Amino acid sequence: MKKITKDWLISAKSDLLIIEKILEEKDLTHQAAFHAQQAVEKSFKAIIEEFEIGFVKTHSLERLYSLVEKKITIKINTDVLTILDQLYIDARYPGEIGLLPDGKPSIDDSKELYDFAREIYNATKAITI
Image 1 (cartoon, rainbow, N blue to C red):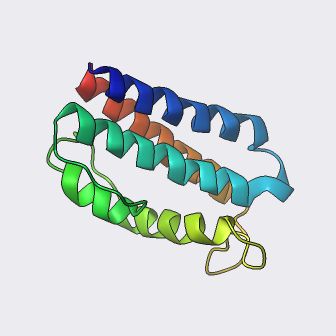
Image 2: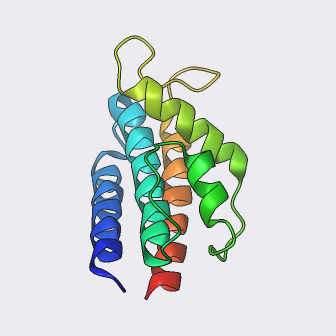
């Protein structure tokens, strides 16, 4: 594993650890969603670096996934990528605070997004070792 790949994975793991600390906090569900997006983004960027797919300056999970989908070994629900992309933008600014179509993410929503991010992180780790 390349050092840059390892660095991306360490950073992704940090986002997952943050989620674990705040997962039961109903006032922080939008932040859990934000960190889920970050963990997925960093996992995808680890794959891009490890397999020298190229330099991509984007936060779009859909765009990043289009670059790594042939390398990743699990089935990914692209609808969740779309949701995380929307939450990522909204969670960074006041007002919208990371809203799903039905409002702020619930604790259950946050848990599902965490599980999704953790699954992608684990799959990434498995293919980059």
